[in-house]
Length: 291
Length: 116
Image (cartoon, each protein chain N blue to C red):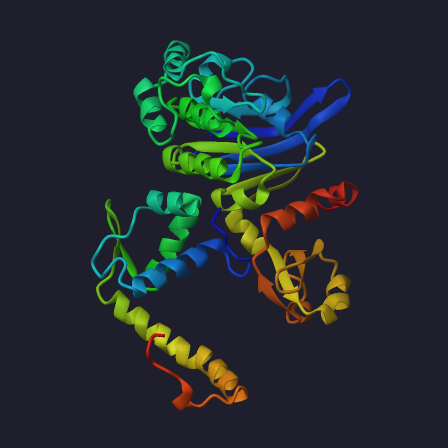
């Protein structure tokens, strides 16, 4: 019943001698919104390509119980994907794209696509070239979300969009895709604004998975202490992962609760994903020994 | 983009926000709460986070789950909420406010109860 939609064990993607994704293991159960975070070149796109069967990989990888390489056609019936280099033909009209999708994908619903587009300012008679960048991305999401799939993979879908377009995009994703059964894997650099949308996070650093955790567990495991500047030395002595500035002053971030006497010197605050991301990806040589 | 502060977990902040609305009678006792999806979309939150917030309000005795139809505001929720908020104000906020009024030497007769 509860087999994960995606399961990877020792997943490795090589380009020549370079390991773009290096021995990565994780699962994505159903009903999750998983953020894939990492700096440029960390391996996010390679990992996603392996999941959709576009990159050869080593290790065990199962998507919807299928092998993305050997059973790709069958897998694609229940998986949809917007790659980072996605484009829609500029000369095409929206209704033509819907007709095209109907011919391309057995589980695409034209009625559903049209219903999704009603949320947006895109109309069926528009040509792609007449649409703004934000509208094109919304159209793309509508076309993809109209596929009756189980897993959606989005590689930096909101790159280059203004804040209102990003908000509309996330609204459509939450409203129209997240039903508690289907899952989505989404990569982005906008860590701060996507945090509240996520149920889980995967963090890549130089091809290695440095963190795979649910946001709920993250709140419990990582302890952020906001403290008076005079306590800075005591905080530093307890070896925090990161020390950073907050609205109210200074804070220290710990993996696991620090000793009680250190905890008493500060006030516990919510560790933000972006602070954790900075802590776990800025010094790879340290992280390798810690995780 | 909605902004959550870094003091409390996001689900707790949503629960506090929803409780503040309940105090204003929105929705009123016995009425249904907005659906998880509606709340998720309105606040751009993961539905699991919304569920946690609603569950926190169930644990506080403010909401009850009606099987298959969703969350309802429990009878007497608003009164209980008002009672506990009053208690909290008198215990936590009023001493601080009183201290500040003393420091500023503001007496009761200088405080207006009329809306300006």
